[in-house]
Figure: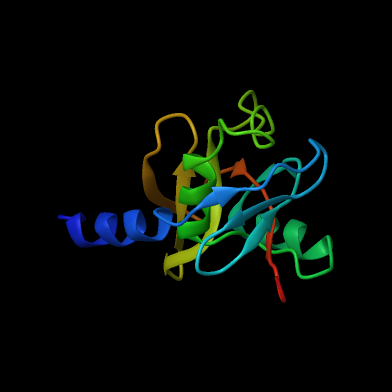
Length: 136
């Protein structure tokens, strides 16, 4: 399958991106057309439905990131303050909220940058919450 158009779209989203310098244990604000912040630590390694529940349990509009948000996080993982915040010992793959169908959702490999999809009940991946910032 040819993903050329999708890659160009994601690259266009990344072109306006910058990471703010926040203290290491504070949420990280990543900017693009939609502004979002990243929870400072991984929540758990779990299946997709448990990943969604873990993010929502944080309250204050925390949620599982979209496929595009995970790609932006991957592209910025070596920039402070995200550097070293992804628990690479327990997970290279992280769940996204973007579903391909009722049984599968997109994942992001933070080791290679690969995005693919996996069975929502059959895979245990890392979980990192995000939330949309309002009025910035």
